[in-house]
Length: 589
Image (cartoon, rainbow, N blue to C red; front, side, top):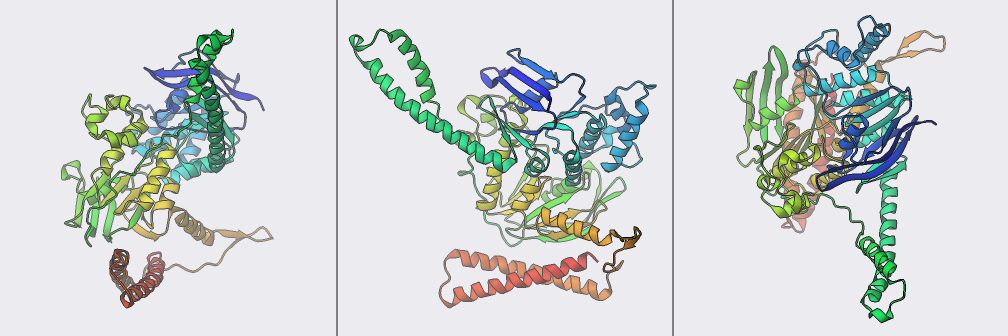
């Protein structure tokens, strides 16, 4: 396979911080490479050097194979807000009006726009949501039909449907890929190689993410074993250095020089610094039975209904995932729940939202941290111990926040939210800009240590699968449906429904519509009453289950009372499973 990209002796530093020093690697035709590194390690800097938007400090070489077509997707898409979608994509291509390739290019653009959910309308770029802008950026990249795609966080700001569309396109494509990504499902399904930028060096692992973790651990163990051998040598050399001059050999000068090299290596054991959430408050603040109750909630803006007649009582300790397309109303819904929405923002709200008196909300927003110009890390969070555990070393504390990388800013913002000791934690796209290691630590903290209620809007399927019990699905027409289970289960359910509708091709070649249960267009009066009764029963059973959980974990029950509570807990769990399944069946009629 020919080498599409060859990197030699490339370096980048900012002040005294060395991101990478004289690194080199090759990417061959057909490689699909995911670049992994902690936030602030230089991933985006490396990609900007490849794109010709930054330069290496040490000169070096960045050589693309001659005549291959290369297309770059940056994290932040530069666009003209006054242009329409199609005008912007054509401007990106910079094709002359009478170019013979223009017609085929425009046809390809139209096909891709349709695939990525755009209709024939052509709104201006400033009318699009962040996720829609990202879709335009991806269409613009794919329309080039390049041989080699270089992408910086391609899934950031994309909704789940958009991620799956891009994933399917790249998985089937024979194009060569080099990308920075934190999406573990996306990585495993698209890439065949993991490249790690670690402590200024490049390490390459063929295979999936799990293989990378295993082989990386082997590499670290081998490095530390070598360090121990060097330390033994260092002890002997140290004895020689301390000996009297007459006891030294004639090669003393050379040996003294070698001693300094050995000393430096002996002190370099490999300790992976990771975010430590051990001292972060875990939601110990008391949370009463009432969390947030929504009754007949509706919200419209500029003639479009985003939420229609939604009623739901959020429960203590439940973990809810919120999914839906870009601009379907997810963030608006969170702003309504938290009381952040203000009438002057526009839009009309009906119904009511009742919040519990003991409720303490920690709200991690998409837009991230707000800080004064020139504000330092230490001024933002005045706790050096916690800052150290969140990978902000002493030398970084007086750095201004605006000098941090995108991921470092998000990490600092996350700390400010967790320090509020919330008993309801609301996370709106928390996975954007965080590196994979930080995400995994955050997952473990939320899964095993955080004790409050949790509401998550996320496009990270792995994150949702590990943390939520059920989903609120925004369908885009104001309707919000409740699905019991994680995201993978939800997609499997949708695929099964589509399979029921799909025609089957007979052996003679004629299409035969597969028989499937006939769905009624509207529930009967009896079914409506059954749903209402089920909702009341499920709410009561859920509340009783929460009380039993509290009693069983208190350690105060003994003897017959403990047996009775355990027995009742099992009965309630079985009843809830049956009633929730029936409710789901009725909700899909």
